[in-house]
Image (cartoon, rainbow, N blue to C red):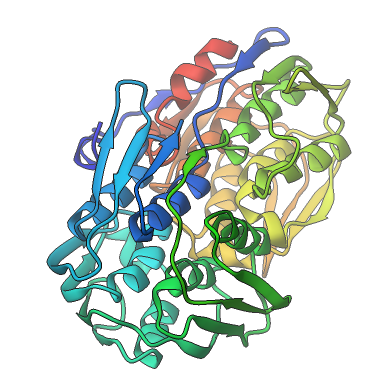
Length: 429
């Protein structure tokens, strides 16, 4: 499927299946969205061609592919789903319109890349995307001497074919993607980049570590000089053959299903060393009663006698929060999940959305300034709005394992990062 195919999927209500016995299943997850889109950007900027093995095929990745194609990159997919990428010529002059959809990586990674080309490049996205924080990217480009027309989606870059770079200070409190987007393009800046975050908060720091690791694997000198400052030296980005890891954040609902049903779920090819924030699921789920083991490269999760409540700061792993909130709604004791105020600027205000939908089912969730407090209670079936947010839809699926008759409005939002979700969920049940 291409990006337009995904965007044309009709809204579809879905009755979340309820488990009648402990589940037992093995899941092969699709590739990591975070790694796929970072490697696509680096491949487009590289000095030689690259190949991505087992990349994600979803709406977000297709939007990134099309955006880079619009800048002159040649990207082809073989019969096994692998991608071959031939970078655009460095002197390419472009006139392009970039559709960001609802993909934060596209709207925040591609503009710094586009600034290194020559021409007029416009950006827009879904209606909901226009509400997502973008000012930091726009302000950053202006500080780097790039002419940007507009203050948020839609906006246009009038690029001159080069960015000098140098020292730059930004406030990335709303998203670590502002940092990663600049770092990924920085090797193409004449002076590289010395970047400093000046805000009070920096969410999802592991994603910045992932970005630095991807750059270093491409022979770029990229490193942190403090927890809130980074350096990327100018130079060539090497082409590479990269095997994309399974998306560990997308493992969350399936591992949660083992706890809810007191069953067993095996995730194939779980990397023992990774920069993905999804690795934090192991410790979090163990605190909530799961038993985790490894054998032959696979991870096994066993549910215990009950789900324990949890008091946790998820500042560095906010994308996992909807899964943990859903589990907490089914736990035997109270939970408080904090440090996730930045989730208000994701696909939707996830804090408000989760509280609203849980309470609509008779649950007891309280919205905090930077999180959610959940007091478990008996819930009933009903309609669950997905808010155009894939993680809202999968949170409903988790609760639906225990609570009958939950209908998810617009289940097709899962196409953003995991089009296979419904079929994989069906395999478990």
